[in-house]
Image 1: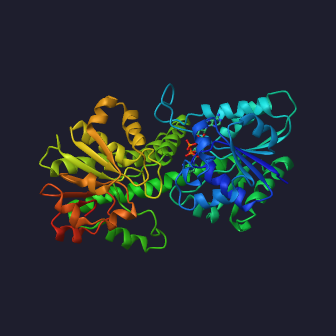
Image 2: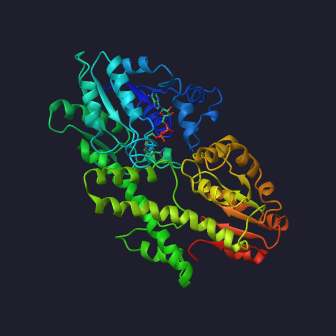
Length: 463
Ligand code: NAI
């Protein structure tokens, strides 16, 4: 029986996941720790609306559990020492240096966690990989943990998280499946797996809790993300063909999606996928395949990324060519900066890359996003290091009013599919724009016919 859980990493995964575990398992004390003091302070903010992650429904779960059996802290050692089960939910970004730069997952944060656990633990621990990790990482973690010489016994489990940002709470409450990988060959391994099964069994039907060996579990997460991203790139590749053949990509998607072997989900054409996971996990898969000499496997999956990059660049090019081949000095309104609706996460958002191209063409951008803060937008652009911080400041303004963003603009680019954009007063927007007034709908979100009737020159993807 598990009484105390610790989770290292209070991010988009650690925060919501542990909040739901605490909610569903009131007898378990769950402590989420992070080295980022600001983040922890926000999780502990008296006003629960100030928690650092925006997810529909999350505030309610945190309000119910925080201080009852859910705690946020920067005292990592203490939480490790007390817990019987430790989740590692730290970031695993793509490496930006050395061997595997731009492809391999950077495991330094994972290794630091393993070393910290090894240093601190005095009692046996079940260590759960919650972060998405390259297949065979559990081996490295075990090596570090088993070589401390202090007699503490560890079991390593892989329990990848399949939640989608924007629907995290819903996904955690009713997951399609929970995957638990462990050492199926030993009794200790099976017991550890059972302990984690028992946690999830508080609310997840037993049939949906899948147990496998640890390597299958690690690889399944990379595979799931690769398949999901592949569907987006597949439909996006056809969107370009639709545009030259008068086919409509939404009609094609509907027609194929009704085939039960294909299914209707994840067939929405767009300016390209973003988010912290798809690109990083596929690059990681490509890198692993290459490192085993499986070049064809690597090339196959790399094409998903190539197509996604093409889709983002193509959207920007189309906007520029439609605006008479120059956007220099022109105001372009950006509706949306988050990588998808219902999240404030901007990591790898298509908006960043489209903005970067337009800024290089000397456009003036005015960005509105309902949940993303101004400093984040500048941070994202500065991070690319394409131009100086000052140049980014000069090229981009951020507003908290969509009408202000669109006022006197030559064109509007819809980069995130926020529902509220559908309900804007488009006549008012049209009246206040320069003419011809262009809309480039990167999400196929708006009613194109309605916009054309108002007088807009409406352009979208795959039509
Ligand atoms: P995140 O960047 O939002 O959060 C990670 C947190 O870990 C940060 O707050 C960081 O300060 C903290 N951290 C790093 N090293 C630490 C250490 N040594 N001690 C204490 N805290 C430390 O990342 P996110 O999005 O939560 O992702 C975490 C993992 O989950 C990644 O491997 C990701 O691939 C995976 N994942 C992410 C999903 C998503 O939708 N964001 C979905 C499924 C999996």
